[in-house]
Amino acid sequence: MDDLNYRQKVIIMIAVMSVMLFVALSQTIVSTALPRIIASLGGMKYFSWVFSIFLLASSVPAILIGKLSDIYGRRPFIITGMSLFMVGSFFSGLAGNIFHLIISRGVQGLGGGMILVVSFASVGDLFPPRERARWQGFLTGAFGMASIFGPALGGFIVDNADWQWVFWIFLPVGFIAFILIIRLYPRAERREPEEIDYYGTLLLTIFAISLLLAFNWGGDRYAWGAPAIIGLFGLSFLSLGTFFLVESRMKSPVIQLKLFSNRVFTVSSLVGCMLGVGFFGVLMYMPFFVQGVMGASSTMSGFVVMPMTLAMVTASAISGQIVTRTGKFKKLALTGLLVMAGGLLSISFMNQNTSLLIGAFNMMIVGIGMGIALPIFLLSIQNAVENSQLGVATATFQMARQFGGTIGVSILGIIMNFRLKSQLNQLFSKSAAVNLWEKEPETAEALLALQDPQVLIDAEKLFQIQNVLPPRFEETFMVLLELLRSALSYALFGVFIIVSAVILIAFLIGLFLEEIPLRSYK
Image (cartoon, rainbow, N blue to C red; front, side, top):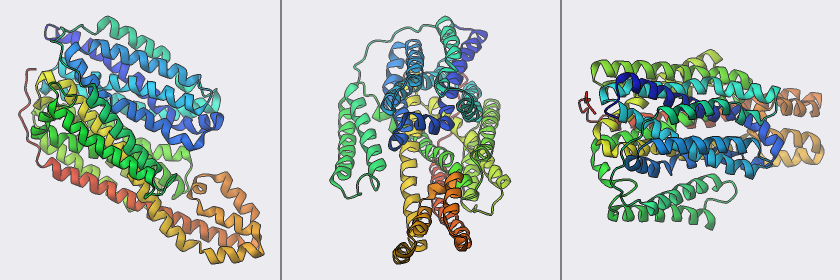
C-alpha cells in the first residue's frame, strides 16, 4: 500500500470505518433486546452463551486470521469477515430456538473477529506509527458511538417491532460497506507461502473453551470439586502446555513465542488483558448495581452507563491527536490507567444512597481513562514489531483484551456470588424460615423469594411479593428489601474493588513499558 497517496488512504479508511461501525452497531444493539428474544425463544439457562460464543468465536481464531492476513493480504479476509457477519446476522433473525441463535451468533463472532483484526492492522499498513494513533482513535470512536446508541436502539426496536429486526436493520448498511471495501480496498502482493499452524489454533481454542466452561459451570451446574470441573481445568492447562510445546517447534507458529521476548509486546499484551477485565467488568456489573442496589429502572441504568462510552470516544480521539503531535505516549498511557483505576475505586464505594449523577460521573472517569490507555498500548505494539508481524501482533493484543474480559467477568461473578451468599445466609436463617413456614407457608414463601437478588431488578415481582404479604409484614418487607440491597452492594463492592486493583496492577506493569520513538515511516 506504499504507492497510495494520502487521499486514497483516507478513502480506504472511511470504508474500513463504515465496516467497523456496521459490526459495532450490530453487536451492541443486541444487549438490551436479548431478554425479549429469550422470552420468545426460551432457553434462559443458555442466556450467557449467546454472549460467550460471540466473544470466543471473535477472539481465539482471530490470531490465525492475523497470521494468514500477513501472508495473503488483508483484503480477502475483510471481505470474508463481512460475508460471514452478514450471514450470521441474517440467520440470527431467523432463529427458531436458542441453539439456532447460538450457532448463528458464533458465525457472527467469527466474521466480526476477522473484521476487527484486519481493520486495526490496516491502520498499520496504511500509515506510519506517528499517524496511527489518530486513526486508531477514530476506529475506537466508531465502537464507542455504537456503544452509545446501540443499546437504546435495541430496546426501541423490540418495543415497537419484531425482535428479528434487531439483526436485520443494519444489513443494508453492511451491503454498502461491503461494496465500498470491494471497490476501494487495494490488493496486496502475496508473500511466500508459510506453514500454517492449525494445531496451535486448535489447542488454543480447546484451552479457551474448556476454561470458560469450567468457570461458567463451576459452583452452578456442578460443584467446584466435581470430576467434570476438575477435568475441564485439567484439559485447559494440558492444552495450554501442549500449545507452548507445539509453538516452540513450529516454523511459522500462530503466536510467535519470540514476540514475548519483545518487552513492549509482552507488557502491552498484559495490560490489554487487564483492560479487558476492567472494561467488561464495569460494563456488565454497573447496570446490575444501578438497578438492583439503587433501585433505578433499566432506562436510567443506560443513562448512567452512557457517559462512559461518550468519554471513551472523546478521550480516545484527543489522546490520539496528542500522541500524533508529540510522539510521546508512555506518560499519557500511565495517566489513563490511573484515571481509570480512580473511577473504578470511586464506583466501589457507592451504595444505595448514592445519587445517579455521582454514578454517571464515576463512569465518565472510567471512560476517560479507558479511552486514553487502550489505543496507546495497541499503538506501542504496532510500533515495536516488524510489518511482517503486524497482523499477528494486533490479533494477539485483541485476543488478550477479549479473553481477559471473558474469563475476568466469569471470575468476578464467582466473587460476587460468594460474597452475596455469605450476606444472605445472615439475613435468612433456616430455623426462622422453617418456623414461619409451619405457621404461614404463603408468607414464608414470599419472604424467602427475597433471597434471590434478581427480584431487585424485577419491579413486577417485588410488587407481587408485597401484595401477598399480610399488612403486618409491610415493615418487615421494607426492612428485608433494604437489607437485600445492602447485601448486593456489599457483593458488588468486592467486584469493583478487585477490578480497580487489576487496573492498578496494569499501571505497575505499564511502568516497564519501553517508550520506543514513534517512526515517521512504515
